[in-house]
Image (cartoon, rainbow, N blue to C red):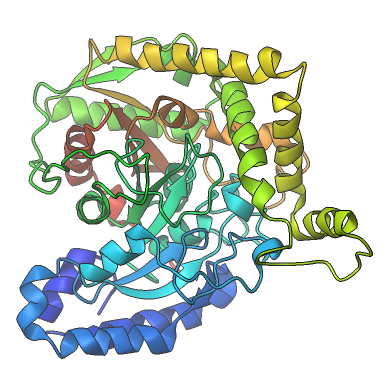
Length: 483
């Protein structure tokens, strides 16, 4: 059975067409076959996964309450899994075995999902190409010489290659949506506070959110429905009811107002991306949506603001990795101070060091007001731009990435060039808004392009209704790479 759809797999098990164990072994076999080429997985859990699947098969009386019955799932390697290595793509956490599961892991397990492995990612989720992983880059299933995007590139590649139908990633500045776009799958970044961050290894605490990657909007909506909701273990998780997201997928977008920030999205776009974006807008128009121009006047400052705030928060969050309590510790130190210095120097990669140093600098005395405080003030202006735009429209559309997947190594020597891959995604994180990327074309006929829709805070239902309607009216979500 093809591992195309989470909902189809669950229904097939209920109908007796397959067992959870058969589905699980098929997924593990496909990972074994394909991942030597892709490097999408950091580790797999075959014995535990087959045992979990067998336990599901033995309890048919419980199946009606398990929306993800027997569905193989993977988690980005910065999401804690009890007793399973969790490295965040970094040498500094080699050998770390979390003593607990993240909230999202618990919730998917209770819904009947079967955990099969951890996916590769940029170190501590810092990157846009998955090349910053200490364990080698993941390769794009559409073209193995190209990046899958980052930082959730392993999760996106695993879903794109149909190794699993569903995976979780984290999104700090586009790290779910950008790889979803480059790998031709659906990726959701929820509103800030919609999903618990308990068990997520922190990068930027005011920006991070966990979200799903899937082959369809409906599968992604179902996963979000399951993982969202209040959690007393995360003080930033909102005590707000989650609407019925699947019920919102009516296919009807008549009268829905879509805003396009032309001042933000025009210029610097790859030709294939620009064409696919305009064609996606035309599809929504034909389906009855209204398309209007809006303005986000401070969006040009988004990258600068993001890379000041996120690095400041990273500098603080990553101070805990010191070789004392867990993870890697240097063997060359002759004093406590030298142990701290050498552990962090040997354990962290170049990009993480760059961001720690930048974040420490902008928080330092004499520079805080000029950089960090100013960035927070401009962040407020960016959020207000969205508020003004949402007075006129229901959703804001943009390309997910200005370019399709670029070649591995192409941008490593120019960090600024790499950072610009997130130019259309950072705004949703800075403003705490929900956003989704859906496949909308193939640049040059070969490389996937993503169409991004951003909604008002906590209005994932409206956003997903439009994304689902677009998906139904187009063919691109049904395309998959030929491995």
